[in-house]
Length: 323
Image (cartoon, rainbow, N blue to C red; front, side):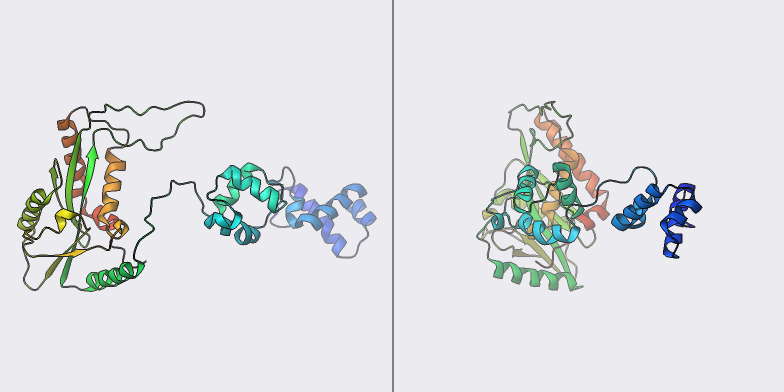
């Protein structure tokens, strides 16, 4: 009663208090100034919704049709594995229909979406994932990676190449319903490849631009990387790479770097991949290059911004040491 923000709410609670003290409904009506019908309505509201039922004015909405626990037990598992419900994928519309039919719950579409949001589900485009990975090799590599990260005498580098095009892939953007948003392109196939290596421990980055990827250009990159990062006595420099053919040419001069190869089809274990994704999202989303020079300048500008912010490289490229 002391916490009630309105006089009307105070009077309603006071009426219930008198009932709890043993006064009759007629006596409460006479003392409170409410009619007997109103007192009966307060009793019914309290029995149905507790104190919330006595809040004056509009309520926050109807009571939940499905409790959170029931959503967790019956809906979340089929979202994670649609095959449990005989489906290959879910849209909110399909899920809404399935719940109404199988759980006999008269949910609205917006309520279904809200229940998903309550459990931290969002609509995302899934990332393609190979089926034929060797999980034993991936786990063994993660254990080695964990030991390298913990060893203070090892400088751990991650290297990879990424292509940047003048006509970037269209990305999601906010668009008014009913309006078509266009993403222009030239179709000139302007492209540059960036060779990069990052040392997450201190955010150091090395990068070069080339027109193609082969063992010759990769050797130039290795030479430059070794020149800019000379060997340190008593320390090992391990360079983690994928299994591209130009990474395994026998004639390569690795200088003081020790190559270590990722398990097959495991790009998720190379944190520099996240760096390429961030660069493309921040600098090439909706941007188009009309000439090779424009594309080259844009790539250089994006790399320069990363050279000046090693803290971003440290956080973005933190190694994934377990599965």
